[in-house]
Image 1 (cartoon, one colour):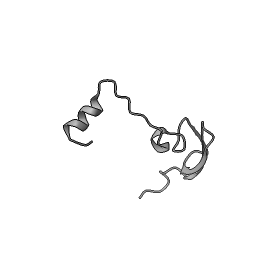
Image 2: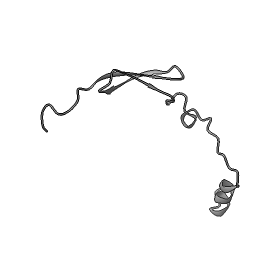
Image 3: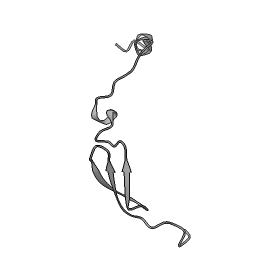
Length: 66
């Protein structure tokens, strides 16, 4: 590995729009994000499947899933 070509790694405080704050390792000191694992619908369990044409039901029927 060559010396003096990699950026210095430091603690970065990441703040989300929902108010969640966590620390990661990167070359920046502060970072803001719009969505995180505390407020994303996939992780909170509040995600909804939008099915305008009945594709989910057609898939389940085709593969006999329910």
